[in-house]
Image 1 (spheres, rainbow, N blue to C red):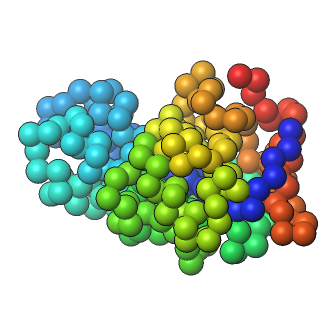
Image 2 (image 1 turned 135 degrees about the vertical axis):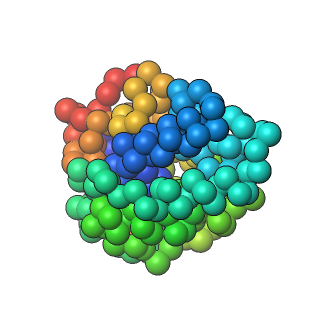
Length: 221
C-alpha cells in the first residue's frame, strides 16, 4: 500500500513515543486521589488534552489547577518511556521541513517525553499550549498544516486514537493509524491501519513524499 503527500503530521504518544504505562499510571493515581473510576478516566484520557479530560470526567474540579498537578506528575514519571520501534529511523528519513509533531501534551511534557525516549525535539511542534480546542477538534492539525505552509489535503497524519483520527478527518486529512493504544476495530475511520512504523518507508522525489507500507504490517479493516 502506498500513500503520497507533501508533509506528515505525527501524533506523539502512541505514535513516536510509547508512554502508555506512564499515562495510565498517572491517570489511575489521579482518579483514586479524587475518588473517581480509573477505567472511566482512562476512556477519555488517551488522545485528549489533560484539561479537556478533566472537564469531561470531573467537571466539579478546578480544571486549570488539576491540569498543572497532572502535568507535574507526568513530567516526573519517565519509567518505561521509550521510542516506538521504527520511529527514529522514519523521522531521520524525512526532511525537517516536511514533518511536524501535533500532540495533546503541553510543550514541556512533549519535550520531556521525547528526551526520555532518546528522540530529538523538533523545531516545529504543535502542543496543547498552542490551541484553544484540542483533539477531536480539527484545530491542532489545521495549525500543524499552517505551520508547514502545506494545504490540509496534501498532509498525511499518523495517529493512534479515535479522538486523533476524528481530529485529522475533520481537518480533511488522510490518516494512517497505529494499533499501539487501541485495537484496530476502534481505528476503522483511518485510511489504513498498521502494526508498526518499522514497516513504513518514506522517500522524497520531486517534492512529493512517497510512503510505502509493507503488506505484513497492514491490518485489513
